[in-house]
Image (cartoon, rainbow, N blue to C red; front, side, top):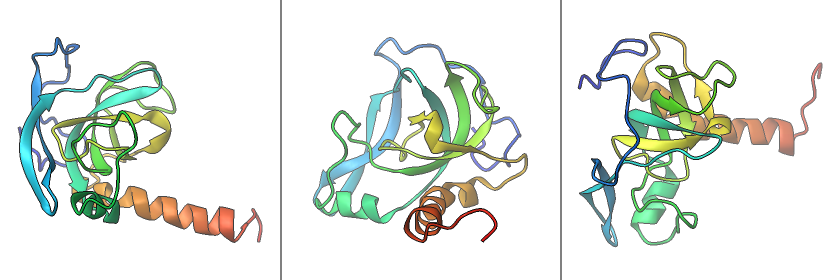
Amino acid sequence: LNMSAPVGEACGPSRVVKPTGKQQQLGWAVKEEDAIAMYARPIPWPGEGEMLLRVRSFAVSGADLEQVKGRFVAPRGCTDIIGMEVSGEIMIVDEEIDGMVEGGAVCAMVSGGGYAEFCVCKKQQALLLPRGFDWNVAAAMPLGLCVAWSCLFELAELKEGT
């Protein structure tokens, strides 16, 4: 795989078949406090309202670091693979929504699993990327955008026209 190809350029197979439990991926999980290691884990499968992403890049967030230190617990039912900010290609989506189709490029905030080859993402937590956008820059955007939005529109109650 060419993980450094710009958004919109092919990087590998465009289809993934539903895992049988034998299809594995590599991902980073907490080994012990202050240490992570790479493990083989089953490729996740998206549920209703979710999509499967081929991870092209991920960002390191404060929550990831806290999880490695044992001070942050992932949501119930979440994979042990860490990582909350990713950019990647949509491999599987149950229905088109807001232009999100298989082969599309997104950045996303996920509950976990971002430090892997594939991860599952809720459609509402993903933003479409323009063709040619840098995967690494895109992976670092979700948390910053969420914080900025919350500060401007929820805390400061910024309204249209003000």
